[in-house]
Image (cartoon, rainbow, N blue to C red; front, side, top):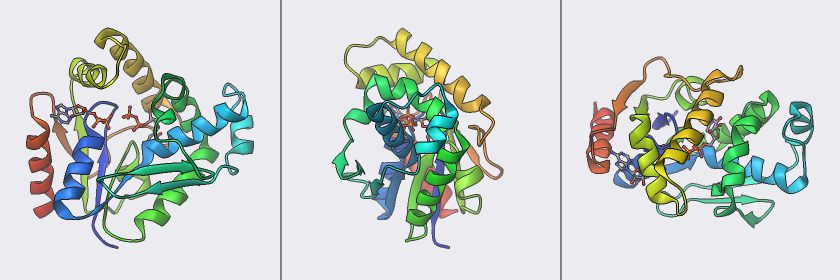
Length: 215
Ligand code: ADP
Ligand code: CDP
């Protein structure tokens, strides 16, 4: 196996920005597994699947063809050849993704896809279960955290028309769903190094992860 940097943590902890920066600095590929769960959720909403019904989600989750591009300077995500990079960030998908991601059949399918991509060469992979489930043998595992206030501040600075308070509430709800689900809950993997980014700049966090890679 090659170099895999596993980057896990809750939403707004800095996974995407840090992973892309690290991949760029080292000339590695980059995979956003959250975008794959979002793409699956976008497709389910599009199809009118009842997201309160895990059996209905399980029955259909083999259908969409999800393709991830791994260039850290321009990651892409397509579902059945439709570019969904924009739509998967909308509130409707964000509000529904934890329910879809909790369905075991969805995880089995997307983890297999992720392992196929990871097997093709050196890469930085971000998500919730990369160090624990997708790639437990990854030589470098990072668990990013930040205070709930900082995470909400960052996300609301990125999105128009939302307040930090509303963000914090939505994030807390998703954190709870993601860390209490039965299958592959968000948790710190064995062997992971926790990096609290609350009081650090993005550049400082990237430098810290590069240091861990070189160790
Ligand atoms: P995640 O992928 O965990 O949801 P993102 O990387 O998408 O997190 O969002 C983090 C946001 O916070 C970005 O806009 C990033 O520029 C900003 N940010 C501010 N300070 C930091 C820091 N110390 N580490 C990482 N990101 C930071
Ligand atoms: O961007 P943000 O950190 O807010 O979320 P994301 O990384 O795009 O992930 C969206 C959702 O997908 C998470 O809230 C999880 O429910 C799910 N997810 C997961 O279950 N496992 C992963 N490896 C990645 C994401």
